Length: 189
Ligand SMILES: [Fe+2]
Ligand SMILES: [Fe+2]
Image (cartoon, rainbow, N blue to C red; front, top):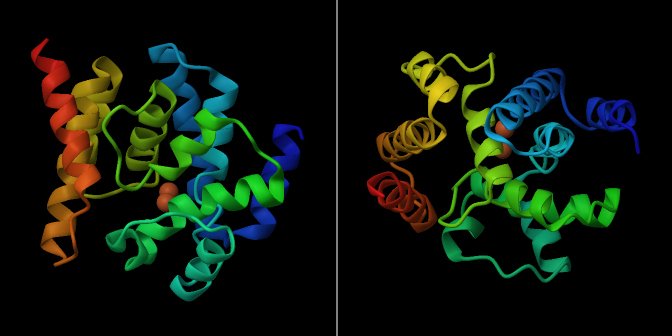
């Protein structure tokens, strides 16, 4: 499929707001990929499709997870905001025949992050956080960091995510903590 065909498919699948977010994430991921030496087209596609599962309700997400026999942890199973990432990745394989492991992993981890993420997964995580439609407090600082230092920007992004998860009284996923710690370890070297 061409990029145009993927855009058309996502436009039909998502609501207008989420489609705008997906386009903006794709553009931002493509820019970050060029800046930090990841593949531009793959980063664009990852950004475009990363929220493929997002319009499904928790019950539907769980049904898909069960039908594909996905092995998911209890925290992920309990929260649609987390479930849409791994279930979305599974749907991309089943429905769009996307089989690229690196792209699917990037989509799977775009909400929690993870230690040992590939460059593509890092680019997607950051793009999702700082695309131009994002307006949360502190986003400009993360954008500034993204222009000069990928690790610093990722650390600021995951810190922001962890703080907002805690502030909303939600369960913190251990993969987010592992992601943060791995960034700190890398920055020491
Ligand atoms: Fe998402
Ligand atoms: Fe997103």
